[in-house]
Length: 125
Image 1 (cartoon, one colour):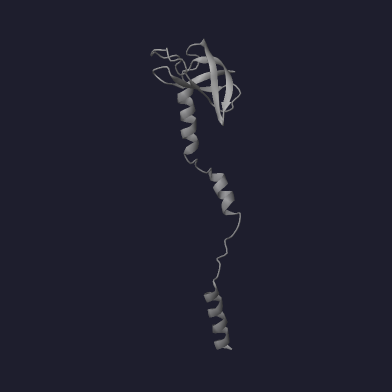
Image 2 (cartoon, one colour):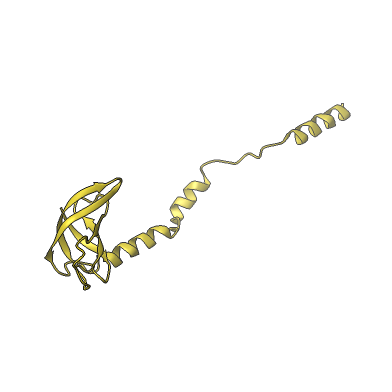
């Protein structure tokens, strides 16, 4: 699988990859105890890796750097897109006009209002 690093631990112990198949993100956690500091990958790096599943979690195994800083703007662009989708979009004026002609709302009359009218009819008769 090929992916782009969205996030990585500054100490190089873990990273999250956005995968080419647009499926779930893949989580990578470095297992070798002898590794000492330094970033293994940084956001925007293109990596190749194998995928395994740990329950519902997708894990990246044995990742290798293909190219550095291929898409450094990807994490921020994804954040911007997510924020834009969360903001309510204004309804276009033509849609507002068409919605106002859709239906008339008829108020529901409760039992009290209906029985009061019935009582008034009986008094008037």
